[in-house]
Image (cartoon, rainbow, N blue to C red; front, side, top):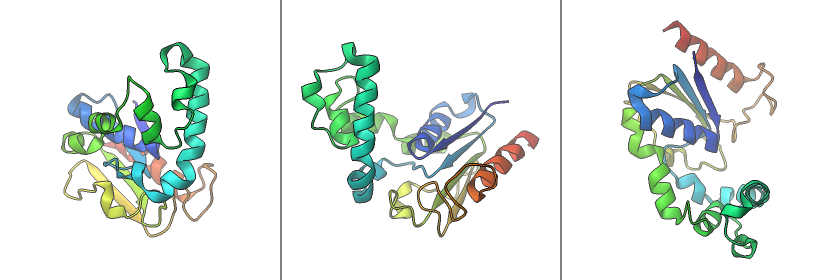
Length: 181
């Protein structure tokens, strides 16, 4: 059986997939760690200021190494420092408002038909405040686990996913339970 687990932006993509495909989703269960049903984290001050400039630079390098012939001239995206600025420069994705409206999990949230664990923490510096993540506690297929501490995918036991850490155990145990149901 197939299970999905995504962290950060990957978590949002897991939520999007499960909602967009609903009953037709090919997974038995899913876990979204430090994700969001909304696109608001893209605009969070800490996310834009600390993480996005580094990640955007890495994405630009990776994109041009693999897809240079399909992209606009390097000069056009050279100044992009955030996801929004980068997406606005890419004709097949941008503008950002169009991209986020097509890929936001929120509009498909009610269609999720597979057991899904939404694991996040209140002190996540990139997804603050937690109330803006699109949490709907009435959804029958989504179980929410919101911890007081944990940061952005780290949790108090450490940074390494060696199966002894809290969040890793939560992910593995949830997916094992999906197999039993």
